[in-house]
Length: 449
Ligand code: NDP
Image 1 (cartoon, rainbow, N blue to C red):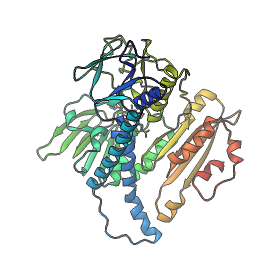
Image 2: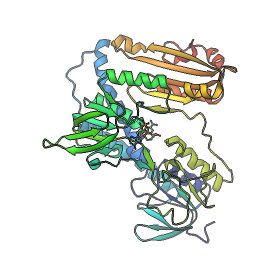
Image 3: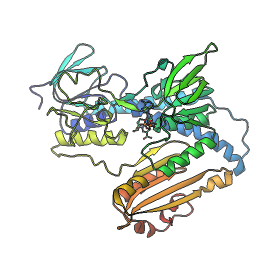
């Protein structure tokens, strides 16, 4: 295929989307190269979902060790060593990084461990100066944390650096009220750090169902996390004692030992030569693509967070797969974006699929809502005053489930299975026809009144 060009496909960015697209394109017979300026695996594997989930597991032991005593165990003196967890997490990240690299190599994908830029419609120039050409180009460069422009912002860090801390701060301020803020608030809080979240609006986790957001807020506050709303970041100053003084709108200054920015992620599309070849981009720098992930230039495609469609790893992977099947597999495929389940790995975690109650009421008119507000059995014995909440939203006419939302232990694990039923268009009646699996938390899904 690649007579005229060095490669059939050149992918920029070896994260979830780029690796899947490159591997499958190669399996379809394409001659493929990929460039990555950091480590193979991208945000999810190296500094996102995977190491974060391990920290979530590590953090949960704080409560489990406490609860164990209510279940009859004598627990001696406990002590948490951050460096042990951090280094064990790094070890596993290395393993997965190796597995991703291996996958590419076994498919004969040529890897360039350096930055690449477009220098012509079919031309890519690598940092080393090497120039290569490709018939098709795929941009899969992901997104980077957005840091508000404010004095002293360089004194803070983002989720990129959070995994590398030398020691845990005694007090941390987290700016933002989204996924990353709430997940890391839970992690740091369980490790004994005092956490303050500040957010510019009066809501956490925009996009999730209101009842669940309220429940998470209430439980987080009960666990000792502080929240300040309508608080726009003004600046950070180092004090003589070496602490950080943070100023914000509508609230007094706060003194902390560390500041973390979790104020959204922006498409990583700067300094790639995209404008020079005429690729159309939106206001946030996102690459505009059609439903087959094709840009305005016929042979250039983009997948994953750099297109700012849905910033989730499994979506980037699907887009990468669809691209490869479309361009090299002779099977035009587009990704379906409805009913994508998502989860926040907070303490406790929450998960949702489909419409929130507010969205359903706006869009459908007639809506029926079912709730289950219960204490997980384990929390009863543990004496933990923490209630779970499941909410099912149905179309009032057909009974079809249009939204399902849960907060409580293992909610994301339960949601993955339940999302299949919601995506398949099942009704509340279908759920009720299934016998409960007792005693579980998930049985609430078929017992809702
Ligand atoms: P989110 O979009 O979840 O939340 C961003 C938060 O920052 C919001 O509370 C928002 O406020 C606030 N904010 C945004 N811009 C500014 C600004 N200029 N100044 C001050 N505050 C601001 O972003 P995250 O950074 O938490 O995560 C990025 C993305 O990564 C997520 O959207 C998600 O797609 C993905 N992700 C997914 C995870 C998962 O699946 N479990 C985990 C982590 C990340 P407000 O809403 O009040 O306007």
